[in-house]
Image (cartoon, rainbow, N blue to C red):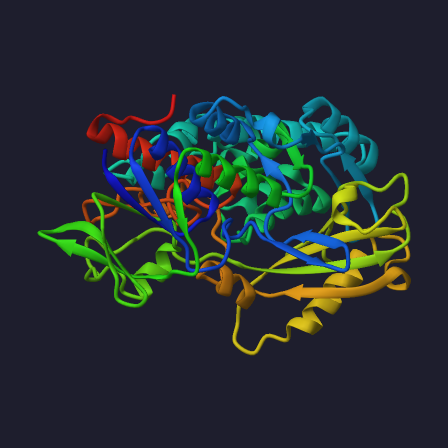
Amino acid sequence: MARIVVIGAGLGAMAAAARLAVAGHRVTVYEQGATYGGAVGRYARDGFAFDTGPGLLHLPAVYRDLFVKTGKEPLEECVALTQVDPAARHVFADGTRVDLPNASRAGTVAALDAALGAGAGERWGDFLTRAREAWDRTRRPLLEEPQPADPAPLAREPYPAPKAGLLRRPTRTLAQVGARELRDPRLAALLDAYAWSYGFDPAGAPASAAVLPYMEQTFGSWYVAGGLRALADAVYERCRKRRVEFVFDTPVVDVLEKDGRAVGVWLDGGREVAADHVVSGAPVPALYRDQVVEWERGEDWPRHQVLGTGRVTVCLALRGAREADAVHRTVVHAEGGGPAVTVLRPDDPALRPDAGHEAVTVTATVRTAPGQEWEAFADRMVEAAGRAVPGLRDRLLWRHVRTPEDVRRDTGAAEVPGPALAGAGGRLLPAANRSPLPGLYFAGGWSHPGGGLAHAGMSGALVAGLIVEGADFRGSQ
């Protein structure tokens, strides 16, 4: 039985902790804050409650696998999952609206043809076929296997060019895919919105980012009753049942190294904790910046994705009942391109004081910059949200603005990492789960396979596999 210290209580770190505890190891989690969940937070006031991190779950199979492998109760006995249908309503800058069904390619094609004109759905369907090729080429190495020692093959673009016509020349960016293959500014905006929602600017994102809409439209979008915070609650309780020990309000200030190997951690206050393995769920950039692990900027310095994109979240407490034909998620597209605003309106009694009120969450991607006027930015977000929520301004009781600095306080980094993407010369590959320092492993959104709830859960499975099976581990089955 090994002694394992886990730094941080985010979803990826807790997923690793639960799996390692089931394997017979003694696991202790040290969390700098007062609670677990990392970016999967909750803001509550006056009977209203809001998710302050992700609002929807994609690829729920990741957490189903976690619960199957760590206990008798399956995921659905611990949380209530429902498919969100329609998956999203898109409101384009010209006023056009389209409701896209959940996990139905034929339904999506029909909806796009009806809203945008004949041929629009076919072009989107052809695009999804090429996106599937990119998915099939990268799914195992990007999601289910440890990052290869030589990631050079993943630096090459896997998205295929159309096989006929003038478009056969290679496509380098997602924006080029929209302009050359979709040939409708609204379809291009639809594609761009998926990239922005994960923190990628379509103008610089590789064409392989096509896997993001493919993933959502193929595997669906799911809501957890009570909000995504309920998933964090369930994972935490699973850890506790497996006898994982949690120590809150206890920052780790250093990783102990002896004879070229991690052998424990220093806690704030000077206490030393010995360990056979250390799993860090802290943001990898913060780990480097704060010199918790001191590596020279050379071969071992991460050449991977070290910067994410900021998120602003506005929690809106509204008087008046949610209208009967309201949809769970609306994406309001900006004029002239740029990040869209996402409006989440879950029909969930647990999030509102009574049926005569509604809790609405509005999010947008933003590039963090010193001196940003967040309240003015939030004003623009609320104005855009008014296109999705009838009478929003007259119904508004109060709002709470959550900025990137709030994210930094809770998670250690103001940015939110995106998922790993192939292509782009390898710039969007996160840190490998096995760090350059033997005995130290990375779990969570800043490590392979990148950001997002599903990806964080995958990182926990990969770290547990590397520790339990060692060099023989070849990935999830």
